[in-house]
View 1 (cartoon, helix red, strand yellow):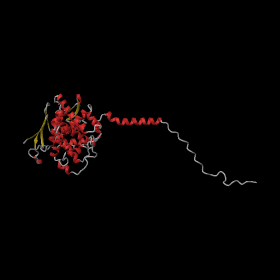
View 2 (cartoon, helix red, strand yellow):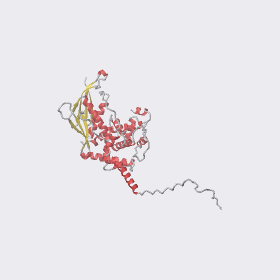
View 3 (cartoon, helix red, strand yellow):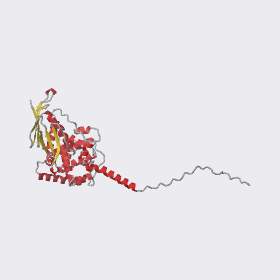
View 4 (spheres, one colour):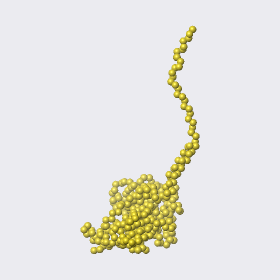
Amino acid sequence: MKVSHRFEQTSCRFTLEGLPDLSAGQAANVIGILSGWQLALAGHTELEGKREHLFALLEVVLPYARHLVSGVPRRFGAPGHPVQIEPVAENGGRRSHRLRLFSSQPDTPPLELSLDDAELADLVRCLDQLRLDPRVQLGFSLPPERPLPRREILERIPLRQRLFSPVAAATALAITASIGLLVPLPRRATAPSVSPAATPTAPLSPPERTP
Amino acid sequence: MADDLLTKPERLSGISRRGLERLDLMLLSVEALDLNGGEAMLWMAGQLGFADIFPNRVELWKRRCYNPLRLACRRGELSEPETDALISLLCALADRLYPMLRQLLSSAEPATLTAQRWGLFQKRLDELIRERLNPRRGGVQKLLDPVEGPPLRLQLIQGLAFGAGSGGFDRLKASLMDASA
């Protein structure tokens, strides 16, 4: 019998449909074999897809949210990947998130959705709910959340601010060196000649006097 | 989960001073969003089973004082069970406040209403910052700065929104453990 589970947030509704994998001993209310899913985002077209599309969505949206929390949003989803997401700067300093979904049907243009922070947060919460729900056992193999390395964090610091310290240090060194060159070197005092070995040039005994 | 945290051997969390700073600032943001935030924290700590770690306000305050921006700042590092308890507490509080966080982040809300909400949040957060943080620290001055403050406040609210919910703990913890730039 077909099983359906729904995960909802304010602007987002995920519906999963499938069957329990009875050969794996799953309970009757567990989805172990996914037959399809629908994603309804308020104000956008309803999306449908298969297992691989759901996995692609998880692989891209969750790492993007992880980077967003660290303040370094960047594009996720390489060319050819069925899902891509990237930050888009908008007027007023606010940012939106462009989600692109590529159809597996040939000659079908990609579907492009522009989500604000609230809509993205709803989508992320829905994805979290479904991947952590014990009633959904589809074998998601997402990498664990890891701290970002230094080179990725550096991107959030403006280039000017990043270069300020080394440039200031180099300038200070150059100024100090220039001042040092202007100061005349003290003249080296002539070294006292080494006294020769005390070789008697004259006999120690007084010369004999001749009468 | 709380039992797991308490039975683990005491070891350092690995969260940098900057991470502890962000953690406390997010807790401060929760207090700015919820007028009764201090009481809610203690109540939530009891609900989550962290009454042994945070039996009263003073113990909770002592853990939060590892934030280097605090007026009464403590040196050293928190243990892993303590930071995990603080992060779990933050995620649970963010989950509770999610509707408010969503309103602040949504572009579908009327612009004037959103501006008023941000203004109210900024006013309360600034009051808490002046009351508890060291105004001579550069990080505090940035938060209070009219130009540099808004993006920092937005980042705090985003952190809370994406840290709320079932998967928020790992995401938030990993971000607090980021390498310091």
